[in-house]
Image 1 (cartoon, rainbow, N blue to C red):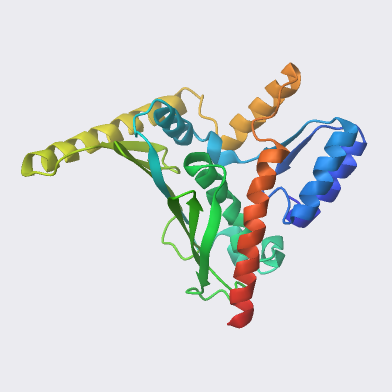
Image 2 (image 1 turned 60 degrees about the vertical axis):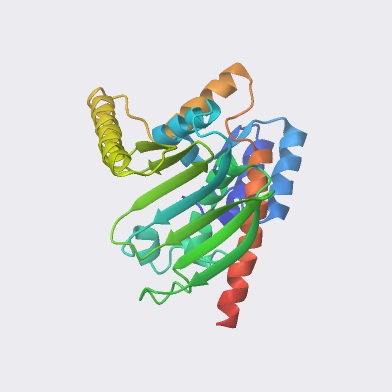
Length: 279
């Protein structure tokens, strides 16, 4: 895998050679590089897509369908947690390219929660506050914990990224006026918590209901895996990209959509660097 800093140069070289391009996230690290990709795409007419793979994981697709069906009512807020082990390959490898990014290892990870927040809270999210700190012992990581808040109009969301976790975990909570949706993305589990008035009875019933939903998710996952039909978000996106090419339709995530994510990422990385320089 190439470092994100050279994605633009490689994508442009491929497009100018008449090749359609699928770019891994982060598409680039700067808005300037995004503009160069967009201009080359316009000049060559090549198809360009960007892999935002968590959007195509089974439970995220299920959550999106529930939101669109109105199960949650109006979405008010989202919270996203991405927790990683300090022994993970990127973090534990001193000379891995991710550490040379603006903001370091955090920058490579941040795209995921940014596009999830846009997906469920609204496309026009704005980072309000970004805070980072260091709790781990890996000397080449200047920061290994991040908390950030976003606004979309009057609605707010929160992101927590950690590289000090005891296990890999990705949690997404979507809060609506009529229900709460809880996702465990790694284990592909979706739990719907509907509106309730708290009482001794409803607490007991709620516990049984949640246990039933988790059991149903576990059985569904086991059947999909046993049937050989399990696909990761990456695999689903690549299949969709190929279908879009054959049908001459827009890719699942366009450069134009991804460019808005990079604008937010760039702003957050600038904030991270300022904190790191001041510490």
